[in-house]
Structure formats: structure tokens, C-alpha cells
Length: 405
Image 1 (cartoon, rainbow, N blue to C red):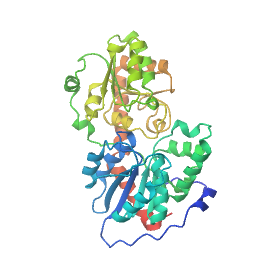
Image 2 (image 1 turned 180 degrees about the vertical axis):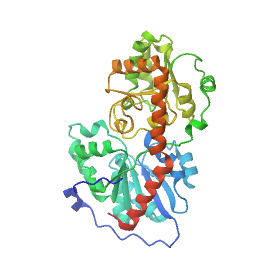
Image 3 (image 1 turned 30 degrees about the vertical axis):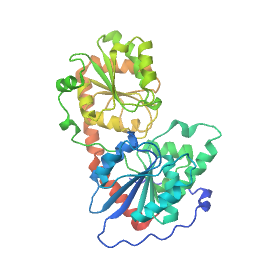
Image 4 (image 1 turned 180 degrees about the horizontal axis):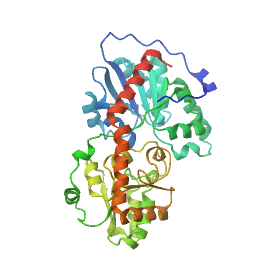
């Protein structure tokens, strides 16, 4: 759905060189699309793209992937999805302009027609490369990042780079209506270029999951204890600390309750220390990175999502597709997905007491909780399947290649 709004064109557009005309492509040959990412780690942005690519029409599109810096954790998975190995660009520091000629040369050899950029650094380098090469440019915004509103000395140069990348883009994808509103306020997102295309979920996730008992056995989890689960990278953004701080209040009514967290990241050590400090070390299980998210979701009784900022959270979509009763922190993207008391329960961010109250309410009334989970499942299957998202992206690519801006 395209958002209609007053036009926004930053003055910095004059700093961009004129774009060469795109090269002609023989009729019937798939158009070549590059996905440029800042990293190739196991984050939400990377995983959302990895799940989408196999749903795109191979007769219409050939995909390539490149990333700027860091290890290629997902290189093998992207090679299987694209049929070609991802290209590392070896960015040494943020303003490493030596990357630009490497990127442009590789894009020219790969005969790229359209580039889609993911994450801030990729947006900036991709905008410059698209201008120099004459490729069409689509950028995507995934998160209402907290740092986008911080008033520091970094904000003016950051906004300049954002405006330049917006000006270069033929279209900007935002993954939720709430994210469009946030970015328009925070940094002048040009609404007239913006298309809302959410993240999507595999509708067969529940059919591929084991039953509750088998899932608990495979994960070595207690057979009868109430289990509250969270899935996501162990980073400050995800609010896991608030979930740990809610657990003692939950255990006051449900003494056997435990928290199960699937994911890995820089906060694992501090979170383990926090669990010990709270005296709940034996009631918290850190599973690390799991490739079997469906099994983790099948094992739990309640899904907790206390994230501090989001755009359109994949983990929440998957939990809803599995009909899991849920409690989540209000925020961009979450509010687009979950109506309080209809699809789950919403609480304020950074509110362990509110999280505990909501969790106890759902654990106390399993029948009502199951009803919320089923309503959530229907919402996701009606609006947020990968097939539907792939069709929206296909239409956008075709329009951009046909019409440009």
C-alpha cells in the first residue's frame, strides 16, 4: 500500500551526481537485483531477507548479495538462496571510500539492474553506487532505532546522509505504518516515495513444529512447568532484562514458572549475571542460537516480547503464526500487529511489573489465552504471509524498473 503525503525533497539532492541511463536488458531475461547489507550476521534484517528470496519468481529475478563488513555467518545460506556466493566488500571503517569502486566494479560485472539496500551503512554506499552506475535503487527501513532521536553531535551528519540516501532512492520500503510515521517525524522520511511492505512469515510454521511434549523433550525442558519464552538476539534493544526482572513476580503465583530464551548476542553474559543476581539462575534457560524456532515456540506456554524498539518484528510474527498467547511491549511495529486484548496483551516498555501482571493473567486463564493466540494466528495468516509479501515486492520492483521515481 503506497502512502500518500506531501512531497519531501531535501536540498542535499543537489549534491548527488546525475544518474546514467540504465542498460537495456534482452526481453525475457530475468532482471538482476543486488541486495546490499551492512552485515551478514544472524539478525532480524538478514533473516527476513533470507526467508523472502526463495519466494520470489526465479523467471523474473536473479539475485546477488553483498555485505560491507564483519563475518559472513549466513554466507552459505545466502549462496543456497541465490545460487551464487555473497560478495564481501571488506569495509575497514565507516568512511572507507575504497569500498565504493570495488562495489561499483562488482555491480558492473554482475550487470545489476536494481539495488536494494538494508541498514544504514549499506544505504549510503548503495545510494552512491546506484548513482554512479545507473542502477535503480530501493532502500528498506526496518527499525525505529532509539539512536535516531538522540540529540548528539552525530545527529546532523547522520541526517545529511539519510537525506542523501532518500534523495537517491527510487522507492523506500517501510515495514509498518507506525515506522513510516516515526521516520517522517524523526528524520524527514519522504512519504511520497514510501511503500509499506511488512515482513512475512512462513504459513506452514505450525505444521512443521513438533507437539509440545516432543518439543520439550528435544530441548531438555521440564515437562510440566509453565514456560515463558522469548526469541531474539541478546541485545539491549530486545528488553530481555525486563523479562528476567518480571520472573520473580510471576513465580510468586506460579512457583514452577521458568523463562526460556533462544538467541545469542553481546548481552548474554550480563543477562546471565542478572539472573543470578535476582536469584532465578535455576529458572532461566539460555538456549543460544536455534535453527528450530518452531520447536522452541511449540515448547512454551506464553511468548514474551519486551522489545524497546522495532519496526515489524519477525519473532512476534512467528509466535502469532504458532497461535502462542503473548505479552508484548507497546511500540512501533508491535502496535501495528497486536491489538491489546484481541491478539495478546500489551504493556509499557521497560515495565517489568506490568509484564509480570500480564503474564500471570494469561497463565491463570489458559482458555482465554488460547483464544487470543488463535485470533493472532488468523491475523498473521490473512495479512503477513511470505507469499503475499513477495508479490508486493515483485510489483514494486517492476514499477521502479518501469517508471523510476
